[in-house]
Image 1: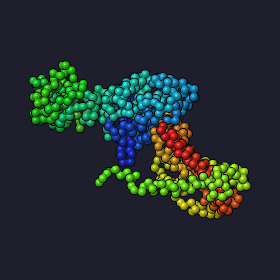
Image 2 (image 1 turned 60 degrees about the vertical axis):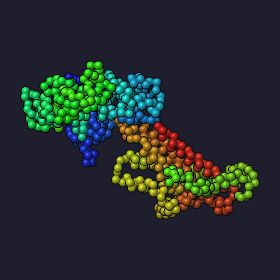
Image 3 (image 1 turned 135 degrees about the vertical axis):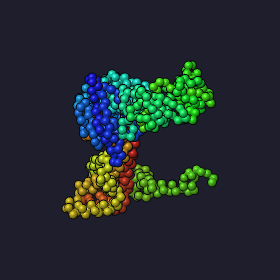
Image 4 (image 1 turned 45 degrees about the vertical axis):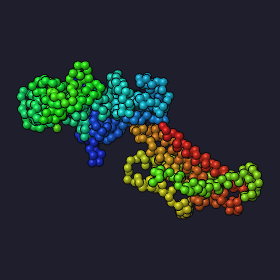
Length: 363
Length: 269
């Protein structure tokens, strides 16, 4: 392991209960130093609870949270060298922008002059120097967002927590901020832990993503890993769009699972550990990895009928009904070339998939 | 059904009732105010406009008595309002921010109880209490009694303000290395300030105007403005009382207005 892969935050068997409700169920994960880490999941999945436990706003019921090797689970928030960008920014309304950013530096024991210099640098970093004397209410949402970021970074925390900080911004601004945040993480070298329910945002920004639901980590990996090789039905369904098909594994030969789709359709895909012959499981294929043709492209191409074409700008989404089988969605890129693979409603077509596109799933 | 629009103003007699209520409420005040400018020794016959009773207030035969009473009233009101506001601020902090502790509902009830107990009962009880413990009646007993009934008046605007402050500010402060005490003094207090000022002004005016409790617990010879006015009126209403009452009314209106605007002012933040 290189130094860069040292653990910044080590969450070990953390349990958090609110009365009878278990918000975190034995969560363990390691966040490396200097990485952009995202906790992704639907609301109520426990991602915010985990973030607040790391910040110190929640006392964990059981388990350990280590910061660079030191157990911090019992420290109050003001004793943890971790800062948070809050969802509603929580800028102090009675203080100027400059005072807001100085606050943390001063509270950490530096004198006013040091705090002022540091705050000045931060304002320059987020390009808001001309607003130093304004009150937070006089800034736009995007500007307030950057002040919140500057305020949290000013005391030079070892880890920065971001609790859905972009959710209040409009789409254009959000996209711009995503790139800005990623660039800032790379420049400062501080570990960022980002919470979001927006899978696209997570894929865009993160080095690694922990997909959570029901208080558990469902999968941890890079953007490509969780998108292309999801571990279970929840992850496949939550990240992007997918065709989830109920199948039965017929036989496994040379690491290839031969599956039965119903209606006589057959598919072959890579074997997945723990899924044996005869079991009813799910198979996931991304719509963009499928294509249509009027003649069978290969042996396993499946006969179907086009029942819907939806134009969504970048792509055309075709919904087809497999003969005696389920429906499937196919995405074809909206281009000169791609348009030749879009067929009128009612056309009899064949659905084929790219090699390695299908994935067997537990659950 | 002629119309679905049940506008209250469309009811017959609504306008009349409204005006009647306003007249009953405010006519006496208006008349006292007008007659305080009357250039006459009579309180009912108008003889022309004059400031003579306002001049009398400062230099007339009764002026010494009233000046002392006014001074007492202000000292008592400031002392009682300051202490009551401090207690109310701390109470609001623990009741609004303290989570759900076991005696929370009970504490809330106890704080607002003085608003519901008939004042005369409080007055008698306080008098008996001071007598029982052998506390000599004087300025101090008035101040103590006033602190007690001022607390709920100071508490209500402070608690209301505090409920409007999201706790994320305090979390942000603690996240930025502030201790609990620093969070209170640097973040919570300044944000609560409009509520605190508003509470102080309300407590001040309630103390300034109080008659019943003051009359019971004051020592012999100690007068506040309301008890002095009452004492003077018992020997017949003189026009100077109208001038004094009008002045007191002006102070009250001013403070209540101020309190209202202070509590409104910074809520936009």
